[in-house]
Each structure stands twice: as structure tokens, then as C-alpha cells.
Image (spheres, rainbow, N blue to C red):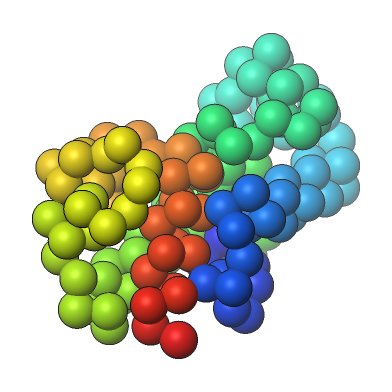
Length: 141
């Protein structure tokens, strides 16, 4: 799952975390095959082909979770929820609210956008998740 893909996410760059997520997703899609990935998720063929070509940074957390859930023990909803919960726990442990997080994180996201993404009300890309998760993990290690 994304939230526990590496033991120390705060020690990796956003790009390195995205690369870890990419490997997870590609391994799962290769294991089940492109046809199964298409039939078992809501991804359109063009987006899945982009993912297979290595373009996962812009993939939403929900779509990434759907691919990771292919023949997995957890559902896509559980994977996405656990990822968002990891962000909330990171904010709690780092004693950081969304205002402080938006001010310290160089993401271009506002506090309201971060809050809506962490709550699951707005889509979050895997790159945004990696950036938030790595940033918060670095402050709680």
C-alpha cells in the first residue's frame, strides 16, 4: 500500500516516492494483465497505457489504489483511506495543521485544498500524496 511502501518516506524525495509507487502499480498490473486491469477498474485505456509507460505521478490516489487493489487483500477504498489516514496521523504527530502545512510545503496547494484532498473530498494525485507524506514523515522521524 502507498502509506507503508517504504519504512522511512521522509528520507526520500517526492520523485523517489513516486517511483516506489510506480513499481508497486506496475508489478500489480503486470501480474493481472492489461485486460484485467481495464475490466476491473474505471481507468480508460489511454490512461492505463500512460501508466504502463511510467506516467503515474499525475494518477489520482483513487485510481492508483484501484490498480494496487487488483487481486490484492485490500479494496481500493481501503487503500486510499489508509493513505489519507497516514497523512492525518502525520499531521497530528508533527503537530501541524493545514495552514502551517500549506505555508511550509512548497506545493502550490492552499490550506483548503490540502484539507479537502486529505479528507477525500478533492482528488489527490500520487505526486501530491508523496509530497505530503514525505514532508510529514520527515518532521515526525
